[in-house]
Length: 187
Image (cartoon, rainbow, N blue to C red; front, top):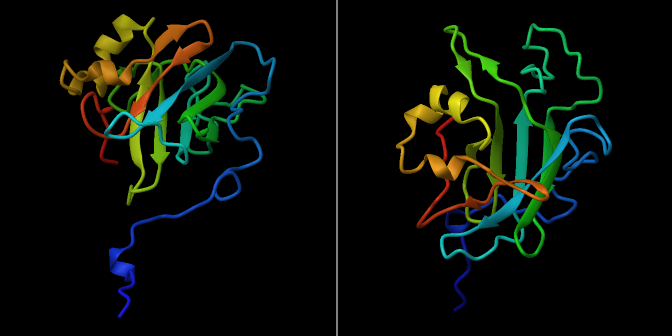
């Protein structure tokens, strides 16, 4: 008698890269050569520190003036070709990258200000739901210190949310589990 996997024993979602979830603009939030363009790149790793070769990383962010390319943002969109969204599948070594702009600070409903940051979602094998985190910038120490979300994270774990500057732009590695796991938010 052969035992087969039942639907209740199966985890997903299952998708094949590059065609499953990717979209035409991919990792280009702004076109090549756009003024102020930066590269955000990193590696997605699992709990053992091994690269995840088939994850999908999405970013959603404000433009350099702190405005979202979205109808719910009442401020005028003046960013031109800025899309505000990017999606990148990881390479066999877990690498991802985005061409974007560094976002501006964001107003909060209570009149405070959030530090410049990029919202990140990760979908990967073994995850029943996406995980959500944020990328903050290392050259924004004062703004990061006053950010209402970042200041709510245990001080010893905040470093998992701050990118590092390097020759290619900003590096932000995502650790899905284990030691030095990236802080993820329940949204």
